Image (cartoon, rainbow, N blue to C red; front, side, top):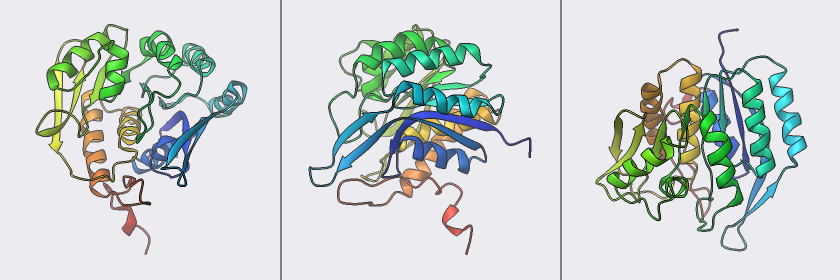
Length: 274
């Protein structure tokens, strides 16, 4: 089965299963690609303390050994990042990208956990800007992350998204797609792609639901899998939008704090084996 495409996620673990590398691996599988992972951090959420998030970084040397294991199998078709844990891991990744022929690099600049309003490991933002974006095929910030990367206080409107995309593109990344989400001041759920020449809007109806945990990770992972399968950037983003919208539609309540998206919704995975 040499035609199976291989995709690596370097990301944090979300034991609730909706986001992080768990979301990435589920998405890779749904796209018919083979997923590998390197765990950079473990995120736990305390149900006895209002679902408070704690992030425990993994030692960079152990992250390196995980990636080395994956690379021993030959060339990857795509690499996707999520929460990276430390500046040392970001520096490690930049070297690995330079030393290996990885065609499709998706940088999801995770800076805050859903349900939290404090930046996770703020020192990582500068390192992502300096070391990873210039090496990336595409970056996929949400509105908050786009503001952080672009040096803008707020990104609230489509015009704000366009300005932020221009600023982020100037950091050296080849493509920028900003995830509008339900907080965007627009009638539709809008994601915006900028390739340095033109803007492309991807729209869907806004969904009134709280079952959207992991939507951002899923969207970025779907782009990575699409690129790994040979889709052009615009087509990969379009398919990822469809995939993630279906996943949000299929979301469910995990507990009273969080409702994950259902990664199998697009392919109706719940009916595969009876």
